[in-house]
Image 1: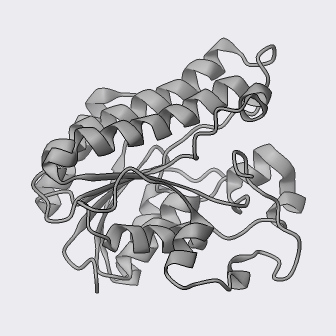
Image 2: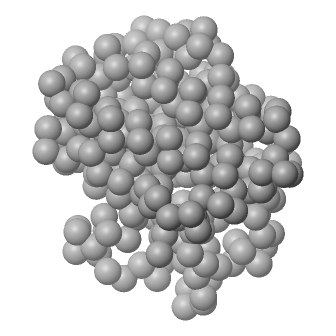
Amino acid sequence: MLFNGKTAFITGASRGIGEAIALRLAKEGANIVVVAKSVTEDPRLGGTIYSVADKINEAGGKALAVQCDIRDEEQIIAAVQQAISIFGGIDILINNASAISLSNTEKTETKRFDLIHDINVRGTFLVTKHCLPFLQKAENPHILTLSPPIEMNPKWIAPYVAYTISKFNMSMMTLGWAQEFKKYGVAANSLWPMTTIATSAVKNILGGNMLINMSRKPEILADCAFYILQRSAKECTGNLFIDEDVLKSEGITDLSHYAVTPGGPLQKDLYVN
């Protein structure tokens, strides 16, 4: 029970990657603050903060389900206060909540541009800001953000300018926070997959069941988070990790069990060579 008594505050935790990380840490005894908007299930997406909380409790962790739209600073503050009142502190922050919009400049509506930046950039910043005072008090505090390596090559930026700059901003915050929070002993790292991940976003927005079958399961990122969050916060900080590299550093090279279709072709994710 490596995370017994530790508290993880996870945004976008009602499904997909956030849920997988929550359950992985719960199996190691962690307290999980399930932070997301979903309180009633959307059949296309699946999952709510309550359904994930039930799974966490069944897995051996302790869950607190908190409805929160991270575009609203007052809701963020209230969510953090609930976490502190129930669990007494925050040891880990997972910035997983994110909005996707794969459109070019001409086809990106203003309201969509505002949405992805309000969630991906502003929301991530504000959640981190309000968790920081409590992370500073933790024994081995980590911030882990789901965002890509920064490659300033126009071929990565040009197809989806609005979305790409929002995700690169998340990674830039990681690099800045690693330096800024070093004096507090708070680690800041990012994590990104080598391949597409089988989530509702991939199915509904990117490529349907065909792309799902060429993807890996969210559990690959959950296992990576599990390994990163064990590391010394003072030593492991300022990294923009790729999942395969994290696992390789742990001596894990057979990744076939993560594939939705074992032995089948895999689709590389955005922003990786």
